[in-house]
Length: 590
Image (cartoon, rainbow, N blue to C red; front, top):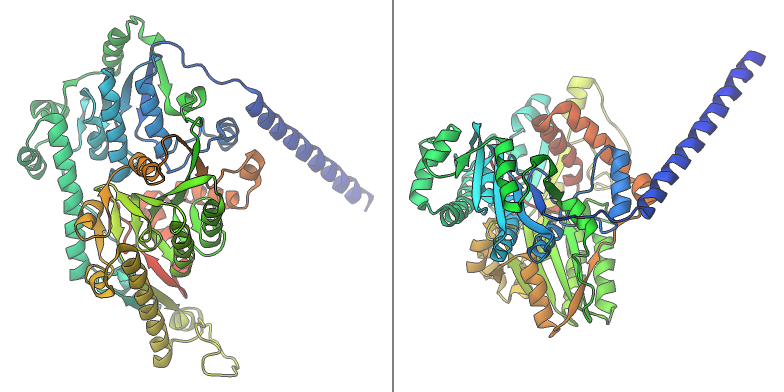
């Protein structure tokens, strides 16, 4: 026993010492992040836009703290948000320390809608007559879309350029569920509302195929049009190059003028060196967006009027939500605070959401309706503003979208998973119980739904769909019948949504901010951004960190497509037993 206590207390002491050391190390990292000076841009700077970095809507303005936290996670730097990237590029236009831009165009982790905003910012930068080069060893199609905005596009001699058109593939699970004897009970309103389609069909329905053909065609048309202008190649030729698989090598890309030259990395550096009058390529001053964000005061806070910029990104969920979601209660409070703050002259709501909870969407809609009565509320749509994402957008004073934004999907569904047969036949698990009334155990996993219960679920879905239609009708000044004719769960691109009255104009987030200032009659303004970011220790010890870490580990273990399957099945828990306004697919364009 003495030996046991000796070992026990020795281990306890070691644990306490280790914990204290870890705490003080973290304190030291946190303290160093506050105390270190801003990085210096230096002279002859070349701003690097690495398209492989995914740009979320909002980056952390507390740069040093964020950087320290990311070092603890093993990454080198924090991710710059999309609008911050746009503002940094605009700031660089007038910054004498920045001589040009290099676009790293191997892969592009950003959507086509986000890429449009980046292209627009680069086009504005080029008016300064500073150079813009794009280079990749093997340029993916989405990266090439942005790269064409450069003065010169170069590719590695042994690399290539992907130019094949667009495709999207959906995965269906009905066959798997049938084999497992798991029965999904599905209720939906809107013939195009296909969110539940993978669980009730083995291939795309005719309605879903129609809407997908239209929206993917719209996006492809915009890509062809933009590349045609940038590369001075007519759209018919570009389409034929894709349809005939003509671009297989770097030489093919050069032959058909998709690129301006075939160069190795050192040759690109030598050419840039000539532009900045630096003969030693090892001394070229490449500046990342993250470093440039820390080194410069690119956000102007000198204006007189305050405009609230609220980023609504992620799934719409009930309650407070987490960092990567739009919590109904949380965003209601944010919008309410902006509404009641007399110093806020206008609100800009940036929406990048595929939707989610119908209830949370209505909670947010209500607060926007109240805010709109006292000050302008301008909506800017990002990659998605569909279903619930459109629900919270429809009552804005004015709505901007990118031509390639995915929006609409005005429809509702609900799903209940019945695993009772699977549990009985595969695992030998059965259920029994006592209830005081016929509906007391509604939704129990131990039995299928009865027909009266199915009627209740469908009635609830139909009722919420009617409410959704009425919200859109009110916000867009249409009749419910008019909205229903363009609703039915159908997905639209931003450009097409203008012609049917769901969106007012194409434009970037910058356009939305300027228009909000115009509506507020403000000649001088600054932006206050929400949600406010968390501090160092909130990030380190926040409740969602363990979930992020676990998800990252699972993704690394499974790989991309297997992880996608895992996430979709995990989402069943969110989609089940609640009414959802969610986009009918995960648009993974290839």
